[in-house]
Image 1: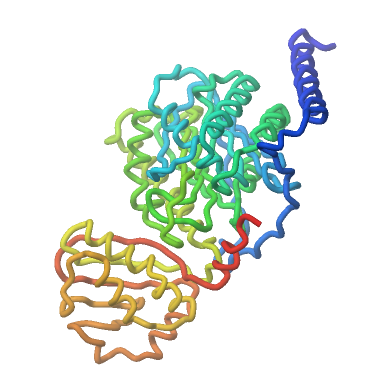
Image 2 (image 1 turned 180 degrees about the vertical axis):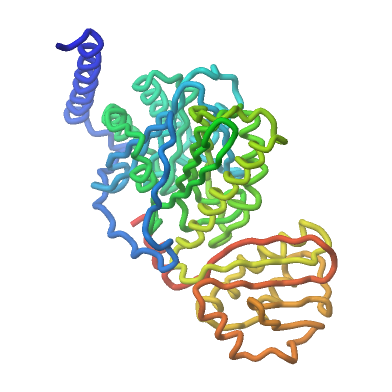
Length: 460
């Protein structure tokens, strides 16, 4: 026999269906606004072939994070029939932290998230994250914030969560108004589909030019029980530090206050997501949101110095690094995963400059694509970096192969050895400036014609 709460739930669902039908009817009979037409969803694009650098075995099995539920649907934001909206519902008491792009043309959703994380909220309230792909809602004027407000309000009302605790992200084409009604009309469907096992579908919904969904996880044994971490990410092109065209969502059941969570996240981002580059371009819409539901039986992490805090932060770093590397492995058109190690710099800034000058050089990246051990291009990148360098102190290695030293090609170097190293899928370039003790490691990929193919018709 149905209870009173059952009848209320049924009535709520019925009202949602009525609202949806009314909206569809209103849209059908409304006069056409020729000044601001809304385009129909384009036909679904053919998927790009999976990157040869993709992790073997497909999407990993991620642990369930108690207090987190996920759903994803095809809303036709840009392409018909493509899963393009995901929702994460987080339990009351969840702590939220975030890191975002520092672009001066940040999208409305980024500005909104930064404002919400900087404001005061009821720590006992729940939270939600809603993400769409296909349209970045960036550089869209006042309509951008209107779209964010409409979406976050709709999600908040459907979940009983304050709009100030609903965080939105958008990724895709820049400069086109977001047809947000396609999302708000499907919020009830998203809520109805929420499932604690739905994180893989959520990972697929946030993809744009990605060729595979990205996931990573970790578990640690802490005082009182196990702490679990699970994360998903999207990113393939327009990748450079500060952050890049990345959306990253990491969930944990750890008990940890927002301020402590934010400190951990902020100090791990530079050596992970800010140490990768595909093409040197930073986007308008990059976001990394970390949510801790507090549902683990493990003791609360109260200080950064405790053994539990150190173990948790190390595990968090591992998840972040794994996801960052997967972004590079899915670089648009990539066939090589490249690690660049720089040491011997006079200071940390110079080490970073040299590493990124090499990683972002089109000449270096195309030589790698052609499996050409053209070490002269590395010399040129060091010279243009702006960092202090002394020709006669520089050493360059391909893996363990000494290529150049003392201002000249090493007498022991053989071109065929360098060429053999370049044929691998995973490459290592090492530079020692011989001036100091500072070092920096970054990761990149090669630059192939496929990158041009993907970006030449991105909007079409």
